[in-house]
Amino acid sequence: MKLTRTKFITVNALLCAIVLLFVVFPIAIGTVQLAFIPLVAIIISAEFVGLKNGIFTGLFFGVVSLAIAYLRPSSILYFAFQNPMVSVLPRILIGVSAYFAAKGFRKLFPKLPEMISYGVGAFSGVATNTIGVLGMILLWYYNRPLSGGSAITWEFIAAIVVSNSLLEILICTVITPPIILALKKAFRV
Image 1 (cartoon, helix red, strand yellow):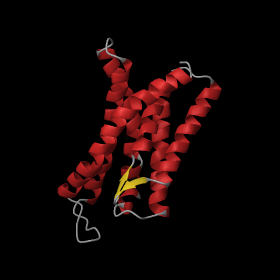
Image 2 (tube, rainbow, N blue to C red; image 1 turned 90 degrees about the horizontal axis):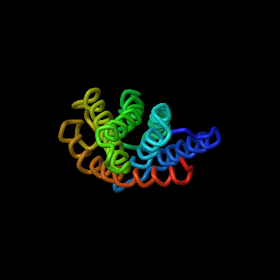
Image 3 (cartoon, one colour; image 1 turned 90 degrees about the vertical axis):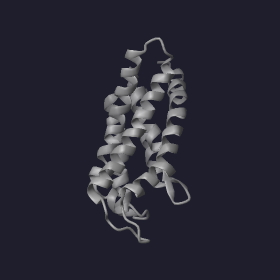
Image 4 (tube, rainbow, N blue to C red; image 1 turned 60 degrees about the vertical axis):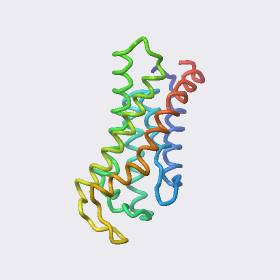
């Protein structure tokens, strides 16, 4: 995607501002925080602007998540997000996954609408985040006790997937493609 320098800076600033806003002020349903808006920003960055941008926006999300885990340790898993392998690495990989999934799908199925490839990229990006974050939590903190007498187990992770991750995947896969198409139209690219 070729953008002028001004448009490039504008898109990057907007996406990073969205990430910062929704990491600092997350949307929560009960005790579950939904991270879909920063995920959408990373996926848009990767699919609309390019791979390097997706990596940068993912890194930004990860570093902000890491900082929030230290500055405002409010969730029961705050200690896990103080580990960069949990909070930063999977977020960098969101952009990589979304970019290559969308590009690969478009190459394999060039006759299908572009919107479908953006949806595939969004699905891949969110799945990468889910598998990366929860996988790292299991790897580093399996059987660690939590407040309330529970512990980090496969059942605990499965509950997060059912209550949170499936909704994030659905929302991101549905809303990301029209946003990218609208941006392409607005920026005339």
